[in-house]
Image (cartoon, rainbow, N blue to C red):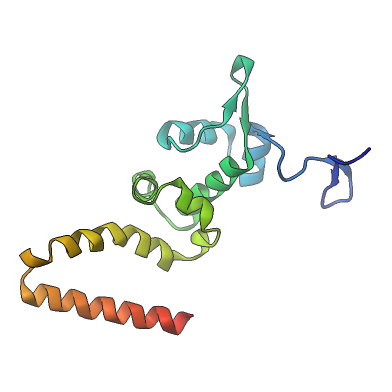
Length: 152
C-alpha cells in the first residue's frame, strides 16, 4: 500500500520518491536559490525545459534537477559566467552535464571539455600552424596526458 511513499532524512513518511516530479519551490529550496532564479535560467539555458501544466505551473523531472544542480555549481561554485555555461552546454551539450556527475567537482574535466573543440579545430588546421607553435602545443598536450595518468 505504501509503495510510492518513502521516508525522508527525518524518518517522516510521505516524502516524494527520487523519480517524482518537483515543483519550482521544491527545486529552488533543494538548490538553495530563489524561484525567480530558476525562471531566469530557463530564459538563458534552452536545455532547461520543465513541464508546464495549466496556469503555467512548472514541474521539474529528475534530469532537469540534475542539469540545474550542475548549472548552479558551475555558476556559483566554479565562477563560470552565464555565457561560459552556455558555451559549455552548446559545445558539450546538456548530456555531458547529466552524464558526468563528477563534472561539477572536477574543474580539470570542465577545462578539458571547453578546450576540446579548440584542440579538434587545431587538428584540422595543423598544416596552417607554424612548426614552432605546433611543437609547443604537442609538448603541452603530452604534459597534460602525463598529468592525467598521474591523477588516475
